[in-house]
Image (cartoon, rainbow, N blue to C red; front, top):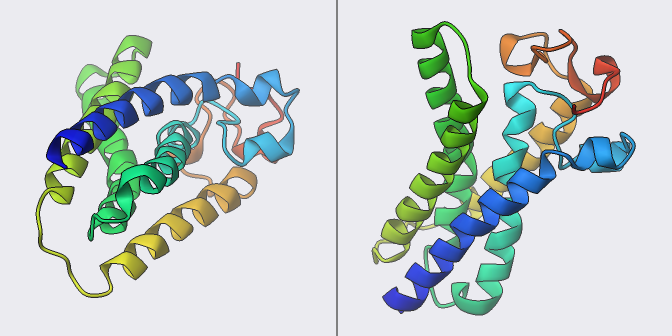
Length: 183
């Protein structure tokens, strides 16, 4: 089982990186379709770019569960936790490096995304190969996933006026108030 899980977590890493990278351009390519805005960044804010991790990660978790997740008692605990931790890794690394260097750089931003996906895959493997399962962990994990999906939806259309949500290129916020495309 560990070998199969290692394969799936590695595949998940590549899936998140590739699909997340493609998702970056989906909103603009869709002609700024508001339905696409639910899963794709609508501007260049840090918050919107967290979708690049979250939605591919969630999609792959659903696929992975179908093939190997059922017998893993802490599968959903792991995926729910990482659906929150992956974006937190991105935020922490982004604000740490950009404050130290006085700005951000595209190559570093991409690197942070890839590193966060890699860390998440490794942590996922480690947690799922550990036998400890807390009662109600599945319910809590699914609650986290639902909370994150709702937060992405709400804050795409009604984001707080905060640096995390601000498009650094336009100063706009979200899909409706940004009035701009992804590029």
